[in-house]
Each structure stands twice: as structure tokens, then as C-alpha cells.
Length: 400
Figure 1 (tube, rainbow, N blue to C red):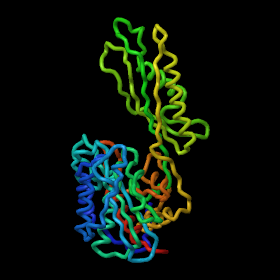
Figure 2 (figure 1 turned 180 degrees about the vertical axis):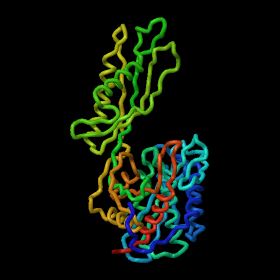
Figure 3 (figure 1 turned 120 degrees about the vertical axis):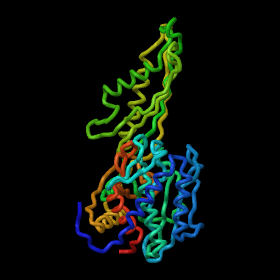
Figure 4 (figure 1 turned 90 degrees about the vertical axis):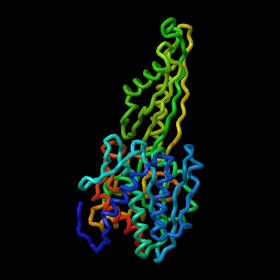
């Protein structure tokens, strides 16, 4: 992946940079509980010379259905050189498995000391990357175009911070960059869309030992529906001709006693695809499978169960134009740190999904995350260092 470096780049203090990201990963801050993380970032910025009134929060947490401690954290600076405003962003929250993490350095990696917790490199590494870029600009007075820095909330639970961001507070950026991923040379230019699905299956209760024939088990309805979806290729990896996507039954809850024919069961599921029409088709097939299953079972007195089905678009897919200025600027920065840029399209959701939907085409870059959302998660220090340099270049570049 290496190519020759065309110019002398500022070398980050790597030990200090690793210490900073480890400090961030030590802070508990799952989705909706990002207050301590935002306070840490604010303290670092004011300590680097940023006036306190440059740090603002929007009210995304009040618009989010999950609530939360704080809104998105926004810092906006005027430029000292000519150029379009640039946005650098990353999300502050982690998955619950990261709470209680004690990061330790192991050679070229950072890992969690406790094998029962995830590290939180997703996405405290991204937070650290853009924080270090801004701190360097503040401390060393590097020339820079107009800049906006955005640390979002609640990305891991449906990109809610980016969905509800106060766009008017961002200053109208023209080039937008998000850090959330692994390889620093990958320039993610698109990502899948995701529909959340809630299914309530109503059976008919009866005594499981005395008169089971007078009941309809909600678990039986769900089992038939799921088997139908598996057999017909609509669950898991879904491929139908030229179209593809995924679906998943993620959570099932129901029942309280073994002597009662289960009266109710709830399911949380999802469907993903880069093609919105095909994603709608997957959702439709899931609905029809559950409706067929409910009709196929009846109690001895003729009564049947029922299904209540609801779907909600969590985020829409996007694909940036191949000549989008943010892509070209990101690729140039990757080349300047000695790496060969490679464009990619993601099968997971990114804050960039909603930023692009808001009219701010956003590319996503990696920062060394590995095996995210698992207890095996690590941070590749070399990838993290490259991401720091790329972020600094993107924050300080003027007009070509």
C-alpha cells in the first residue's frame, strides 16, 4: 500500500496520541450516555486555547426517541486562509460491551485488559483523530480554511445524532469527512440502507396441560414464519437475481410460564439493502410470511392468532458521485501520507448516511479499528497514526 511521500508531513507525538485515545476509551459512554466523553473533549480543547463559547451542543438528544444526556458537540472556526468550509466528524458513543473497558498497549496494538469487554476503538479512535487535528491547529496556530468539527451522539442505535443534527449550526460545509472504520486508505463513498422491523405475534392463551388444543401458541406462529423465510431465501443473505440484501431476526421475547400456551411474542428484526426498492421487497416478504403463519394455525374452536407489523426506515442508502470533491480531497490526503487510496462501499450504517441525506455529501475514512463490537476488538496503532496525519492534512488544506 505504500507509495513515496511527496512532501514533509508533521509527525504526531505518537505516545501522546495513544495516551489520548486510551483515556477516551476508558470513559463509559454508551449510546445516550455521552456526557462524560463530551466533557473530556471540551476540556482538552479549552486547554489547547479554544474559547469556551466556541463549543456548543445542539438538541439532538431531545429530538431523539431515546433521549440522552447531551446533544451533538460542535466547534466552528473561521478560516485563516481561503477555501471552502470543511467538516470533520466522528461519533462519541460505543456499544454497551465497551463499558468498563481498561485499555492497555500491547506492542503495535491497543486492547482491552479485561477479556469480557470490548475496547471502544469504535469510535473513540475517530473522536481522538479529529480532536488531535483541532488541538494541533489551536496550539501551533496552523493556517486553515473555515472548519467545523462535529462529535455526534447515538450512532450505534440508528445514527440518531446525525439524523437529528442541527444542520444550521454547522456553517454550510462544502467538504465533509467522517472517521469510523479500519484501514486509513479506504475511502468509503457509499453505504447500505436499513429498515427496523417490530413484529407482535398474538396467539391465544390456554392451559398447556388441560386444554392446549384451545390455544394457539405465538411461538409456533413465529417459528413457522421464520422457517418459511429461511426456506424461501428471505432471511440472512438475500439474493434474488441481480438484487441483494440482508435480513435478520435479532431479538425474540415472549412467555412467562410453561403451563400457559404462549399468548404473545415480540420480535425485533431488520432488512438492509443498497437498493431501496429491494429492501422494501424484503420487508414485504417478512410481513407476508408472518401473516401466512398466523392464518395457518387455529384452535379447536376455530380461532386464529394475529400479527401486528411495523417497519421504520433507520437510514437510507447513499452513493456519492465519483467526482465528489470530498472524495478527491480525501484521496489526495491519503496519497500524501504514503498510502494508496481505495474506494469502498459499506454494508453497515454510517453517520455519513444521514449527513448525505441532509445535503452534505460525506466520505468516511478508517482510523485503525479492528474486530469492532466484540471482546477481541483492538486498535492498530499504525493505522491510527496515519488517520491522524490524514485528518490534519484535510483540516489545513486551502484552495488548490
